[in-house]
Length: 294
Image 1 (cartoon, one colour):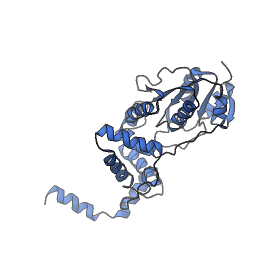
Image 2: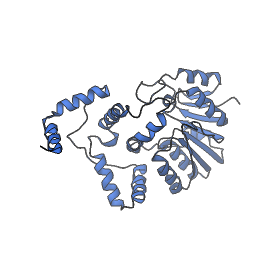
Image 3: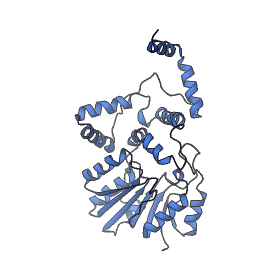
C-alpha cells in the first residue's frame, strides 16, 4: 500500500469529535473550531476591506472579481469568517502548534510576528471602521490646529488613526501620519492606503536591531492594544512621551490584559503609575491622556 493511501486511510479513521477535543485542549478554551462546516460570505464590507480587494488585485495582477472571489472563499472557509470566534480559536491553535518554531521570547518576537503576519492581517481586516464626530473630545482638542502630526505605535491596520487623518483632512487641516510597527505584509498595504487617501504616510520599521525607531514630534499618538505586547513597556512609554508635544494626546489602553501568547506584559500597573507621575490629564480613564508636563 502506498504512503498516500495509508495516510488517507488513517485520516478516515479519525473521529471529528476527537479532533475538536484536541483543538480545545491545545487552545485552553472550551470552544470548537468549525472544521467541517463552512460559513457564509460577509454581508457588508468595510471601506478597508473594499480597498484591500483593490490592492490585492493589483498585487497579484488579477481582476477585482477574482480578488473578491478569493477573499470570500477565505472568509467562508470557517464559520463566522475572519471576525468570528472560530477564527480566533484557529489563531490560538496556530500559536500553540507553531510556537515550537516561533515563540514570543525577546529573541524570537520579531520573527514570530512576521510568520503569523498573514493570519493576523486577515483578522485585522475584519475590524469595524471607527467613526469620528465633531463632538469627540479629541476632535475638539485639535479644533484650532492647522497641522496635525499623528503617530500610531504598533499600528496594526491603523483603522482609528487613518480614519482620524481622513476626518481632519476633510476639515482643511494638513495631516501627516506616521505608522510604527514590525514590517509584515501590512506595511505595503498601509502605504498604498495613504497614497489612495492623499495623506502623507510614513512607515517606521521596528526590528530586533531597531526596536524603537526615532519618532517625529507629534500632536497625538495612538498606542492601543500595544503595551502588553512589549517586554519593557515603561521604556516604550517614555519614548512616546518624549515625542509628544506639549498638550499632546495619547490614546491607549493601559488596563491589565489576559495572559496569552504574545501578551508578554499583561500587567500594566507600572505604566499607569508612570502616567500618574508625569501628571497627564485623564480624559478617559486608562485610555486617553493629555500631556501637561514638558
